[in-house]
Length: 57
Image (cartoon, rainbow, N blue to C red; front, side):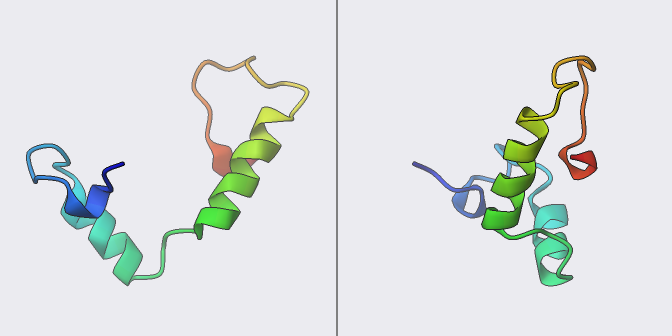
């Protein structure tokens, strides 16, 4: 499995933005992100909107 941090720049053009978010403490932990995704999948209205934001879960 490859990680984003080791990706070639052309494979992940937004890498610097991602790194800046991490440095600035603006990324959630993997555990929190997984919890939010699972909560989103468990919502009664899951699938009603074809574009969703798990931060709203």
